[in-house]
Length: 280
Image (cartoon, rainbow, N blue to C red; front, side):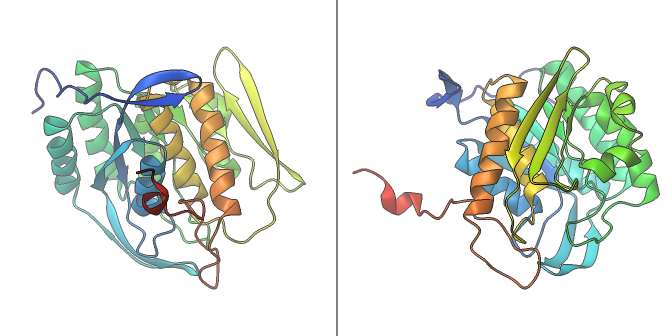
């Protein structure tokens, strides 16, 4: 199973929230692959890397996908998903987990069992993005998988539904009842502002920003959840991690490269080539 302890984190340093913290945070991403590179595992890896973390992956499904939609989905067997998790955690260790597209109810339950064992050894923050429908409108979770989301929310530090997903989960009270905090994303609501509400049993905080008029928003939910997981893995408070995550998503949207004929990918590198801009 899992070792009684985890490999020690290497010591580098990043400045987040005015504090110097150990990095790279080891972020385990449990999610599906997006062949078009705009969302899913591909967006997650880019996000974690840009924010100073180390991305590890347990791929739950392969998709044939582009900016126009999802043409085909092939779930990865649950035992292979578990093997990926065990391989990463048993050797490298983990500081935070992001869960996205889960693939099947069997995989959802298997992932919960695995993460419960990890949390029993080491408290690890978990961010759950309850992916049900892609930006293009393609369904990515069947009824049985959505029914299994309850167990995922019970181990999650934060659940990040958009408004249709929040409704499908039973509303904020239902999510809070599982023990998870909620980030209710407001992008689906019309109007000049996007209002995202961070809701915990103790408080509510509004993050309100002007809407960016663009079709290039593919992968925003994946990116936000991974950004928050990275912040939590780096030791940031929940509201700090959410605030930085939203800021990164907005920056990536404004630097979208304009690819594809539909809902295009964002510009995670923010229009830069960091390697070429390095000092020395």
